[in-house]
Image 1 (cartoon, rainbow over the protein chains, first blue to last red):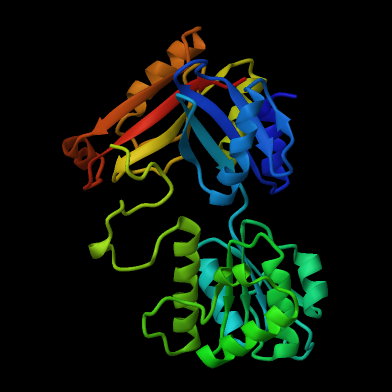
Image 2 (cartoon, rainbow over the protein chains, first blue to last red; image 1 turned 90 degrees about the vertical axis):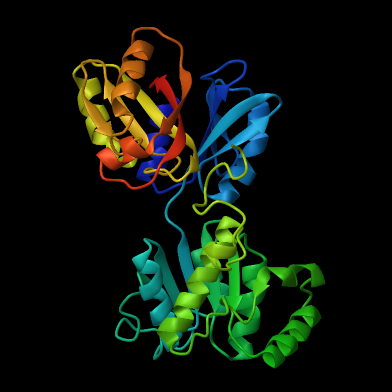
Length: 252
Length: 103
């Protein structure tokens, strides 16, 4: 099957793949398609496949210098997805915020009275499920941001544990610093390694003085975008890197 | 890419071969992000965009050359402020475009 036909299948099914093309150096034009599961199509040297996981995690097309050749990694992936555990009012604000930037959203809560379309009109999907079951169903991947919002340890702890076992590019948790500390101790007791805690953004969001749930959602979305682009989230005025993400930072 | 598929399919159904130009890198500001594509058919039809109009004319010629058997190639364009203003963009920049035939 040709790379083009394979790519069409990936696009049609909302799958994830990267097409690696040599654009300068030797063998210009040689291509290899690598699917998210690591399988490949095409005549490109198979050692290129090793570049695919990092390219897919980055989630945007970019250029890679590799062994003296320049390779364009064209990343094809569905838009990022937000998975919120906890159908509180901030969940609706978050779903509304991510919709504006083209993401999709899933909200889950074990409490059927909370997880309703009336309370969450902006959510693309609503699940009534306990954390373990919800995570098994949603299967957060490298294109998913997870936010845990219940304020109740019996939901938050298993949800955070499951989030840390996934490849989610962002894991956010609400709560005061004191609550974060207590949660951290409980998760350590539950066998989560110390090193995993760096992945939790808690309290979630950038420091923009957010007060209402809509403002909090914006602050959290801004942090998700910054995390995805590998940026710190300060004012552009003070930024040393170029303004638009997703390409060749640094090279003239 | 997805939005170009209907046009590409129509061209190929007519027996036309197709070249694809892709923005692979941008420096300073640029009108279209990395990954943007322009598809060119053998008989001269266009779909998509790599610059919002600044360099499509030249990319079209390169695409025709590639379809006529020329090698795939990487072309760097400096978008001058004059050109950018000409199509209503107020920022200049530089883009690298890779042109290849669609196999």
